Image 1 (cartoon, helix red, strand yellow):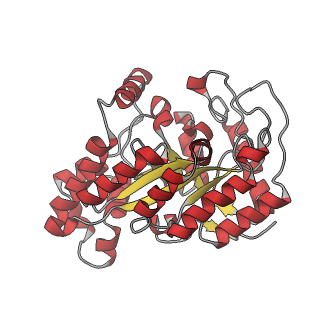
Image 2 (image 1 turned 30 degrees about the vertical axis):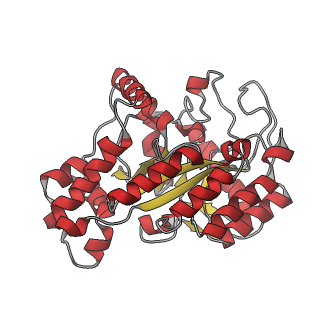
Length: 337
């Protein structure tokens, strides 16, 4: 295994290595190498084919990724490789991208309700924070973005004090492309433009007392050539189904060029009512692996909160803080701005 693959194996067997049950040399097994293989970003036609196969269910996360990770643990640990999943729950985003347009529906009150549900169930989660919410975010010709309000800053500080771990979620969330298939705040930016966006986003959150080490790309889209720059800034870079057409289909989590790439895929990416049966399946399967779960506050607002409440109860015994992924804090200095 190369250095990235060894680090990926370290993520998969972190508890066992720390406990002295396994040495790094003991992980040089075929099933382990297969599960953590670091693959290059494929050419565009392959990425598009992967995205289509994922959309149509011809390739699934449960078979292509989760099954291989579980097999790797069985190969290295035997029956001891089985165990409960370690759910990494992520919520996109606060403030909601439409908070400036529809504050009564997607504003701070809705977020506080989401947080109460997670907190009451005891579910730690990653919070993708949008530094400067914009107007009409799906229209690249629109303009206007604003800093977080006092109410939003208070809600953010309260959530982080309750255990939510913040991540940077772009800057304004306004797409640079009007096509729904190409919505992205990052795609097409050169290195200077991307650096300026990240620097400004971090500066805005620093005023709120937040210094995140995790990045969640708006719309889950970024250019493959931007990976190295993102990996220099953050310890973890997230993704989702929309990442596949631009970056390829990869296992998760994997170490890649200095950062952990952590995309989330269906059926653990979506609405609570669809995620809940998947959580119950993975609990029954006992893979002993990290499983990324992605929720969207706006989707739960639109469908009511009952399904989210049920999902939170199902996830609670298995949800782990994101800081455990790398054995330390993923954000520093959270305080009210």
